[in-house]
Length: 446
Image 1 (cartoon, rainbow, N blue to C red):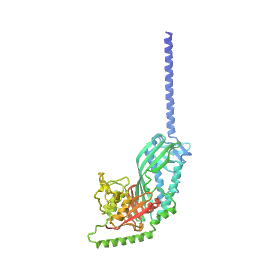
Image 2: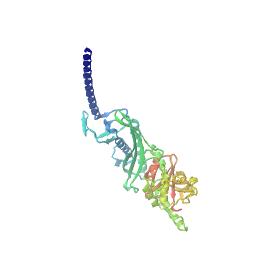
Image 3: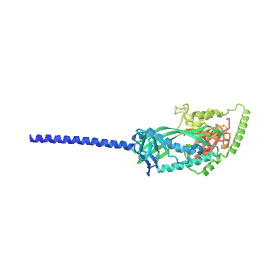
């Protein structure tokens, strides 16, 4: 009996101790939760860190780990870079990096908060960049400033821009976030320049962020395909003098105007000779080719096969719209490489692929210049008119079609494979140093 009584007392003591421990744990958890909430909305002024840029900073609550937050951050980051191409009087910035980058977010707790440092608005968050990223972007900004100044001497002046982003993919863990986006950008030309209203393009980029003491910090970014022709807001990283050397190929306004006059004379002689040839094959409809290029520059025509590297295929389609007729081989599967032939592939039948001359840069040029009989010549950039073809070889092979030419001979190109509308030739040459340029002039008949 004594043993039972002792057991009952011991059990009662243990029960009371267990209840006290539970209540104590719950109190500690409540205090910890309260501390977490207070920490999540704490504001800091002039955080100095080896990993991050100095500036006002708001500690991000967990809700800011969403992809939308990173997309907005990337948009602001790229807008700063693109602004380097805008004429300074239109840009409104005092110098390259005087204005810190902020993003606006919908606050989750309080709209306005204050502490001993003063009043702060919780919807304003500084963009953090690693020291290496900040250093690179300063260099990139200055390189784009130089590019802007050089191409402005050739009549290309940018006065405004806008952009939009589409989230392609994301991976966000506790300490690392990798965000891939597709960017659409428009750069507007000065209205008195006599060319198109704007140039536009798409590019895909990947950004990596690390969570550091001051919050998410951008540590790297890259083009998803850096083997293609560069976007217009990608810096060439060469000196102004080197850019000027690259641009010698297109000359000054006077030489371009003289070249256009010569081209008109060539076209007149060409058309007069056509009238003397009975049953001539045809004339090239430049307007129809350009209209096609403008219609499909950022889409894929479902009636044609399309490819990851689609630039020559796209230009070939535009030339067909302008009147070029296909030249089919007797045995297509075995004669695709023969540049005497030129035909498009079937979009849904792998047994009817395109000829290599229809989709390949060098094969197309061999067909056009040597085997087509279409009076295409390799000429000077001074002679370019709409409907002509421009190609590059070297570290990057590419095919583009001329869609605008101004009265002073400035050419604008449209292309696939980094889909772009009306890119200024001068900008492309200065922004992609080290390439060989080929100007294929369609002489208006075949």
